[in-house]
Amino acid sequence: MAAAFSVEGVEGLPEISAGDDLAAIIAGAAEFADGDILVVTSKIVSKAEGRVVEASDREDAITAETVRVIATREFEGHITRIVENRQGIVGAAAGVDASNAPDGTVLLLPVDPDASARDLATGLRALTGARVGVILSDTLGRPWREGQTDIAIGAAGVHVFDDLRGGVDASGKPLSVTMPCVADEIAGAGELVKGKSSGVPLAIVRGLGRYVGDLDLPGARSIQRPSERDLFRQGADEAYDDGYRAGFDEAQAEGSLRERPDFE
Amino acid sequence: MAAAFSVEGVEGLPEISAGDDLAAIIAGAAEFADGDILVVTSKIVSKAEGRVVEASDREDAITAETVRVIATREFEGHITRIVENRQGIVGAAAGVDASNAPDGTVLLLPVDPDASARDLATGLRALTGARVGVILSDTLGRPWREGQTDIAIGAAGVHVFDDLRGGVDASGKPLSVTMPCVADEIAGAGELVKGKSSGVPLAIVRGLGRYVGDLDLPGARSIQRPSERDLFRQGADEAYDDGYRAGFDEAQAEGSLRERPDFE
Image (cartoon, rainbow over all chains, first blue to last red; front, side, top):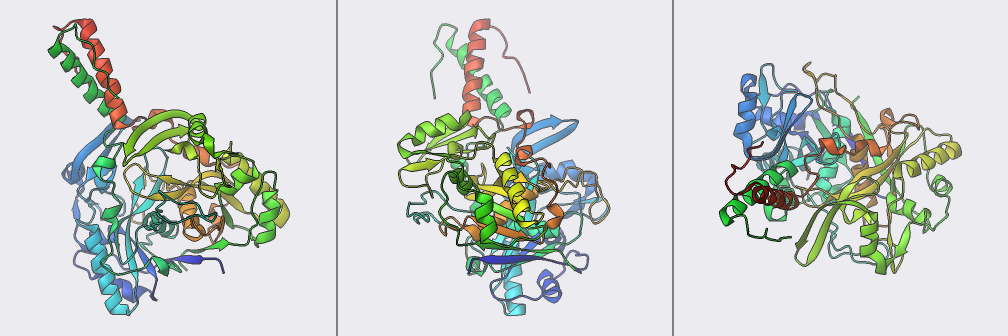
């Protein structure tokens, strides 16, 4: 039998407010079995955690959530800010979102999405008796591809990678660098039933129990590439400008007769 | 009823060789119904199209498939080349792959993955009578996230985006920039059953018929961001170095008394 799985949206959830017990609400809205993976739109976690600020502060909120600006550019009157946010995620607008937020407000991401996922998985396992995994998803753009996909910003009780390094392919050759990020793929699959306009914030993925594990597995933070391995830690324009200034200053400091240093 | 879909791997395919009629082979290996989406690992399309070269030419093959080098860096003795390939896709190694290739060879991507997808969808629709969509998938890394996900490098008979621009969210607010790339999310869902080591090159996605459409819909090439909207068309180091050289030369040409020009 070939592998198979299913993804189903969960409807009928009440509007979530600060202080709500999400695990209890979700356990009451759906059935869970061992090996199920719950994909939760991070927005409802933000709402339960009270991560809501006044909409008039949207730009301030983005700035406050930003650890590092990577690139800024204006397209058609709209300024795009690609930043690293407090959660370590690189994306537009630091995860600050006005859509699906209560009127006059914007939503911030959960402070620690892996901890939120762990709380939810712990609660769901206790309430349902089922060994479930939890992925918190958010919608992110990509540098070289149009549109967005949902990715895992938090995870608990799920292997975020299917680590094939050291394994072999079907013809016996080593899969030396292959490490599919299954958590991101599962988050994307969840988006296909949750949708942005439907108000369905949950999806249950059944049949991928091989990726479900203990609650102390590494979370989605482990997906973030460390800066020493990041070839795109700055936008091309920003890096060029920094280089230009450095080169200009260096040439002036050295006087105009010195050869430009050669470097790779 | 909440939305739901299923993903199933298709086993039992013979080893594919140059000149094979993929549509006929696939139509013989699985049942199709209207609205099904077939996710095909691009490798078997490459094999059917004879896109195989001698392994001794791997580095040459990468160079030949490269249109533009974006970033190069050595990590732990392994050189990573991020390039734009002939298909317009930005990724490592230009899509040249040694895994799952016949011994002593490497596989190149199909010359025109959208055309390959269209041929396959046309053939499958004719052979099965079912209105199916086809996505050709490949495995790609991401600049800021570890691991890889499968994405759509070719598509036919499928809407690659769920274009929500101009629509509203569940609370009635405009979804001004939201355009989920469902083709990439479906490709990723397919990877979860196909796997890298299992030798399962096909997945059938059932229940997402709302994304299936005519064969002349825009293909996966429409997902590629045009260069004028690309903030990361060069690696940070490469852009810095180019800027440094330009700034140094400019300062020398102008003489050492001129102020460094200020620019944003």
